[in-house]
Image (tube, rainbow, N blue to C red; front, top):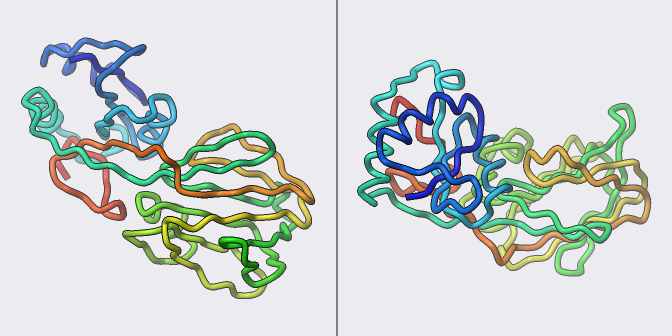
Length: 240
């Protein structure tokens, strides 16, 4: 089987990959192994969309590192007994660009000392009029345990979540049907938009719009057990 390696400290993984007979092929892999934390997995999905991912934590991101558990997971990969799950992704259109996210689409004020003013429409209907705050998070169930949860103190299993970040007036978070389309219009910037942990942000100013909907693509994640999106955690070298 051909695998690609993505993440940090890949020298920890390469000997194990060779031991189990995998061939490293960064150009046309059948499986992508990410080594590190959640960010490594998001980066792997961005680099290799749609190809099955196997997420491992390394000794520097886990205080309970054991090689034996990584070996067990790789053995399961050889045997073909890992479970594959498919997770919803989001697609955003902004300023002629398309952003794809596994976790979330983020709109954030660019200047820390200046709030962003914006409006949100859900399936063409305005929600709450002008909103003033640090921005908006549009999250998937997979990503609801990340930035979305830090704002709302909640997670969800189905649909698309909206979290209003540090709004001056309280705005309740929403969980919408996954068929809903969300459009945010910047009334006063500057602001920025990004997908997941992609370091390439899109600059936004007054009048700019960003449309977010369910993507036709999905992420394929390999794991030992069936997991809900909000339960997902990387396969640790401790097995936990």
